[in-house]
Length: 334
Image (tube, rainbow, N blue to C red; front, top):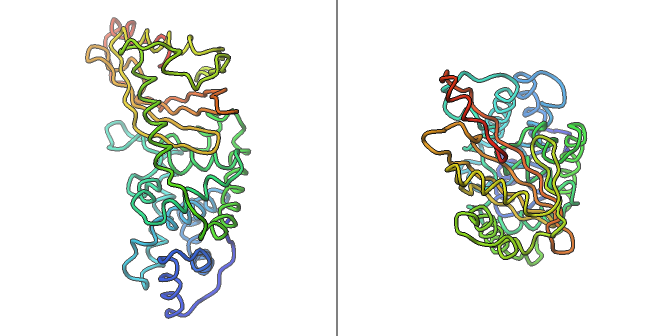
């Protein structure tokens, strides 16, 4: 938890804290959040009830608000603004808890596109500072923070499956990530922040090249030179394969069946890279692969040593003929 106590602050002082936070003063933001935490938690309790989910909704709201504070035009509206972010987070949690009727727009999204932290950070003058702070987190804390705040498959259960850890471990690592960020961001505020965009662009190019390698006729050795020859690939069904060739064999098989991939997001951290891709199925077999996937690449000594894959949940399928059912099963990636 970033902060957990609250105290009333005069309106003039609140406005001053908002302006300080907007100018990049992390202490002002911490005090601002401290002042409003009790009210934010009350909102979360009304929607989610008591328990850790309500606290998580408030803590996640703090991360989103930190990256968006520059957009708040009226300092006097900060209370309503923070409460609105908490409500959005709570609704996201509720959507993840219960089935969503087929046909509802955005039914597969677990995080609000309107409150996408990565998009907000990219638009903010503080982005290099924030990304630099994320780079300073411990590897375990950094991994779950990036997956939670900046990817589509971001429920605790999905993060646990992707990382190969219990849900309780994910929750504790997120709490640790928030604690570390509260300490790190003030410390690196005035440090030189190397732009994170260059590394992310390199990793995005690598992802696109590897996923399109079969169609382009490129060799495994050439396009995946950064991947160790004995790397471990963890498939969604729990299967583990050694080396690069099994993955390329599956990509090749899907490609032969008319499946292609579109990179939708790439994050580059300290020793990890995260890909997100959409599967583009052939018109005659629209349910061959799930909507998309998240890839977690773990690196050591400059080489990718382990890759873990998680599929985006499939939407409910309409009734189709038994013949179509027999031909829609995926051979590997899906």
